[in-house]
Length: 481
Image (cartoon, rainbow, N blue to C red; front, side, top):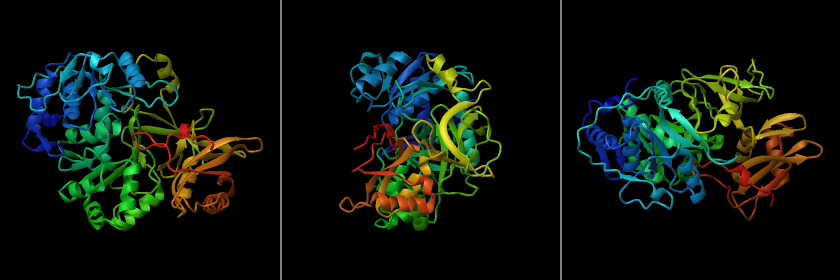
């Protein structure tokens, strides 16, 4: 197959990576990754201590150039989770900065220190095939131990090329983000994406509105973020006029990893004149859909299927929904070259994840507009509420709640009800904790915007919602107070 990063085969002096005050040109990156690749065992697996640093980017790119599967490790993971991942993936070594302090278990592996200033002549790239593993990324493990999704080189190449088509992404673009580098969003899209295009990425290390302002004013053209980051941006815009000007200069603002509330879309657009583009993907599928740069940016939707991706909605019995009316809720199933090859050491889980005819069961519920736009309403396991004979997606109720001025954050779940089957429960972080909106007020608010059967029957007030590293609300952690 063709190399994942053509820009490293005949490298230039253009800047490829910037982390704070540290940079690497394509020529420097080619030398550093070539030297490191020559030290790696071809065909095996290596762990990468995935801090938001230049070393992590060099380590992963070196592994890919060597034909070695990289297993990104979250430095915030606990001992038990790390132990499971290392036992399951059995890496031959761990790649880390010389200054990283590795925890028990990880430090027992042979350690290969990453030198970002390697100067050896790049080793000839081994002949890696399309289906060879590129990354093994572990899922969040909400229903058991994390599973290692084996992502082939083919999936990375096709996803990044499909996004280039959808977003008109070129080597002239400069991306800024502050995402973690142990997830698909920050690593594949945020680091490998610019390198495949021959462009540049500036990583903030830690997200801040000041960093976003500085980099967009300094020539960056694209911003990637998760909803919690865009929520902070929306809140900061009235006090930070320079942030609004900087965002207005961006060619593309992209949000992913969870749904961006409609009211944040609207606040950002009103202040900057720019619309945030949403896309939809998973660890197992990489990217499935996106609002296109040349398409209509409808707040609350994740756009249309990317080139090469087949997508359908199915009923509970697995039968496809054939007519889309923007109301009928179904589970998203996808197939295409963007998919993973399976879960490492878990043939049972791999088999269960696919239908007999090869469609991947995402577990995400959505409605689809007649013209193909997809609107996700939640996870099948936690966000599909069956109440009074209706199938209701938690996401649309959450968006309605967030439009109430007394609500700062909101999550919606279902709980058993003898009459309705399930009743709708709202978990609300009030704007003013001393004067939270009443359950009746919020029920009337939702009923007036959506439909009476979608109103919450119970409301809990919280100081904060439990979230994971990517800003997703951990609904399984919500319990009745």
